[in-house]
Image: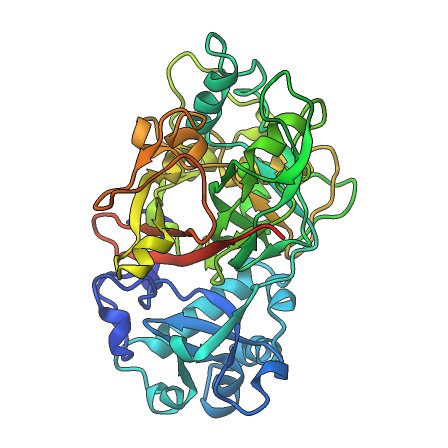
Length: 442
Ligand code: CA
């Protein structure tokens, strides 16, 4: 715990929803992530409007019903009315004071001993009985490259003597991604594109043979900024609502051929998958850590620096990738973990990415999505992509407890990203997960 935490992070707090108190629950009462859902069992469910809900244990609190059926503090009613209409984006645009007010009200309402419990018990749906939507429809999507260990490992594959380009420690590298193909995972179609079988051979148009994932966090903009008005570091986190998991599916063979000189294009734009629950920066408060740059590295330029960022800019989030092959599925074997890494190893913080993005006056809007870049650790087994784990496809990765191996993804493979935070004096919270299964090329 630290100076950023309040009563909503109290580790002694328990919920009257029993599953929220399980030690391994991603969604205890200290988390309270928001998402959009609709019950699947209801008649005409496939056409029903999306509702806003809060994940609590293995349940979803339906904020439309909660608004109608429970008493609330006066100042919370307008927020619940808006959320009750399904308008999550409108709520996020209200900014920090509204986010905190709702968090405090939900914490009190879902905590053990709440007088609202008898009313709110009637407003729960099992998560297994709802369909989820994207929390927000991203208007724009930018992918950064903040994972320095990813940048070094990938750089080594191309430039063994000089893996890190000279700009890396000065400027947060990013490119504009494609918002239209951001989804929740499910089936992900193997793309076709220009690929080369060797450096000398001419390209052919064929299904991607080096399909990969990238383990990232998605940062969701809550409050935008006006065109021409950069966001200062001191305000940057007031513009960010929270985080989800993000899988930046990547076609390495297409990427290797197309990326020069303007960067990734079709190798990335066929699919990006995010997890459905928005975990707020407020919920992550107990897991904030100082930023530690290695001795001898340049200090960030003033527009990317603040006392707050130095003290709390990093976030301790454990990140995992799991893989289940079709053969494992046939044999009833569970997924195997391919890697574990931590967001603390990112070189640039969320605030720095947002401040840098707007530093030229570029305007962000509610629902804009910023990918952090692949978050790998320094050790060989901590690569956040198969490109790293198989050293560019040269060393097949043996899958534990199976006779199979992988260099890149095969059809039918299911990739699942998971993340959670744990620290002394805090209750463990999780981000949930995002899964995608590779479908054969058309
Ligand atoms: Ca990426």
